[in-house]
Every structure is written in structure tokens, then in C-alpha cells.
View (tube, rainbow, N blue to C red):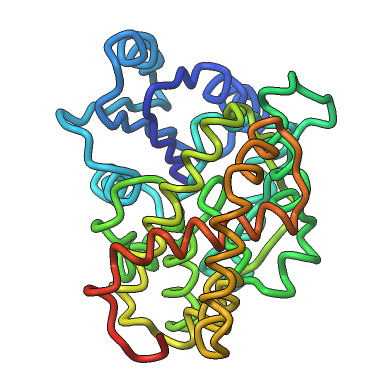
Length: 308
């Protein structure tokens, strides 16, 4: 009934798989667990391949194909009508995690999102930026996520009807990190696919250092520029992404040039502040807006001029 899909890249998934198998053993839930490794290093492939068993299938890709295409690959192997996607660094915190999802399969929604939380224990300072950002921006209860169900879509912990994924697919042009969930949520919204947010979170299990998190922020901004090209600068997509909405508002009102001057003056201090692990949402948003503008300059000949 449920195929649990875990994309892997350079991480051991034994704790996650063992948690899922433990619940399945107690409840006899009708599941299979699929592991697809996107060309990880040898030590990770060696460790994860040993997890193969009666309910667990492990597949290795011969070359790295990226996050979006790897998720689409599960359609080739899934035997059940519902697919539950979990990030490989997830930690199960509920004894009836699978049961929560199984109850949702007959209730009408074609996509169900469980959510994500972060530990309350403060990590070392070098991980504070990711930890603070996650707790303030990603750890949201289902009631809050349902206010903007498509905008709140995240790929780390969600269930989708197999036929729905077959009809949409993740955009294979997005190979790197960031905003593939933004685009997929937008496609769900365009097609009026019913989506439900429930209180069934996983614990985010792997924090990036402040430096790594800022690098991934830049990667995500580059992906967002690419996605603007893919959607032909669609006004409804821009309206749904807060950063884009503010960016184009600055451009329309003529304030982008003075913003650039201020960012040029402040950017090194802003980066220093963030690398120390401090998170002020206003400062971080200002930094992302400035970095996005810098990235946009390299895309200006590619992005349609409408609404710019």
C-alpha cells in the first residue's frame, strides 16, 4: 500500500531504516522501503547496501543525476499506489509515524505533508545559523502550514499518490540544491491537486555549518533564477515566493539601484554576522535579496523581460 522512498547521497540511512522497520514489525503495516543511492562515495554505498532485506530494496545509480531526477526514479521501482518520501537525514520521533500516513490514504488529498522539526538542544556555534533558521522558518505546525498549503510544501517528509507524481514529476532540469520543492508546490497549485498538511513531523537530523549553510543558500538562489526561466517569469509564481515578490517590487518602484549601493557597503559585515551563527530574520532576508540580485545579473539575458 505504501512505498517509502529514501533518496541517498553521502549519508548512512541505517537509523532511519531501522526506525521504519521497527514500527512495521509491531503493526504489520503494508509497506516497502526503497533506497536509491545517487552515486555516493564508496563507504556510504558499502554501508547502505547491507540494509537490503525482505522489505528493503537498495538501488545504486551509476552516475549522479541530482535531487529531482532521483525522486522520479522511484516510480520505476515502487510497487504500491502511494509513495512516502523522506530525506535520508530524517529521524522518526513518533511510534505510529507510518500509521498516520496510512490513515490519510483514503481521505481525498493526493499529497500529504507531515512537517519537520529541529532539536531544542543548542548545537555548537558553528551550526547555529542552520539550527536557528530551521526552528524559526521550517518548524511550523500543520495549522500554520495549511494557511498556504502549496507554498508550505516541502520534500523532506511527504506522501503522494503514485499517479499524481507520474502526471507531474519533479523537473529534471533542477540538479542542484534548492527550490525544487517551491517549483513542485507551484505545479501542484496550478493543477489544483488536493494537498493536506498533518501533524506528523520528522526530526531534522543533520545540521550544516554556518559556512556550508550560506553556500547552500547561494546554490538555492541560483536554482531560483533558473526556475524563473522555466516558468517564463510567471506572475503567480513570483507572488508565491516572498523573496521574488520583494525583488520585483524594488525593481518596479526604482529602489533596486539604491538597494544595491547599500548591499555593496554592508555585504561583508552581513556575511561576517551570519558566519558567526547569528540569525536576525530581517538581516538574513536582506542578505539573500542582495545575493539574489547579484545572481540575477548573470541571468539577465536569459530571463524574459516581462515584469522585470
